[in-house]
Picture 1 (tube, rainbow, N blue to C red):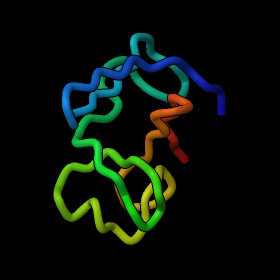
Picture 2: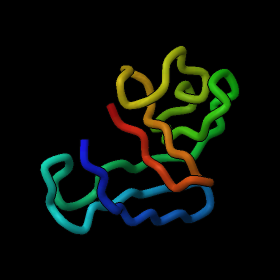
Picture 3: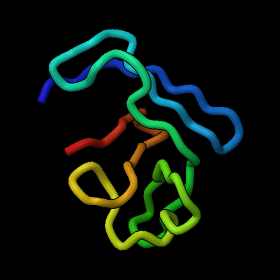
Length: 79
């Protein structure tokens, strides 16, 4: 899968990931939006939409759980 550059806007614990150009992978516009939460079980930052997401069994783009974002490496993980 080709990589692309997304714009991240973070205000407090709120995050919005925006794709500025349409691509094969994502359309132009908001790709993900929610609350940054630490998922202790996986030791990863997730983009949650409810308080229950913090305790989701599975996380990441290939699961039914919340999306994962690596804030240090600046990577939004998808399947």
